[in-house]
Image 1 (cartoon, helix red, strand yellow):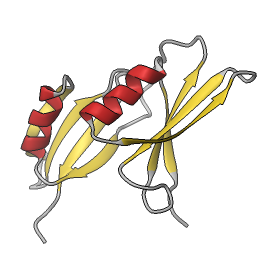
Image 2 (image 1 turned 180 degrees about the vertical axis):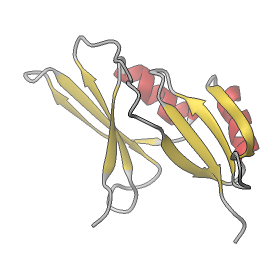
Image 3 (image 1 turned 90 degrees about the horizontal axis):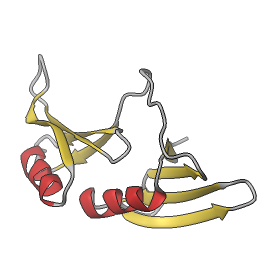
Length: 129
């Protein structure tokens, strides 16, 4: 078994595709339009779905905002250098909500960014091999 994708409901599909491609460096893998069911999907990722986990962005037609609730945490993405990743996110117009630094009580370097819908994305710096 393996994880195939994580789904996020978004308020503006084009805005979210732009963020995940231009700010986070993902590729648009595929889209699905379901006008009769009133939703559209975009699958984003860093590689092909048969080898990598994808992010499914779901736009329910007419819904521009969601209550994110308190149960949802974040998406985690490994990066080579968390500080450089933060600088790249800011340079591309993204929002960094926690600058790169060690996790509280540990040594792993992390940072957090936020997508246009308010979802948190944790950047985890890869440990040297």
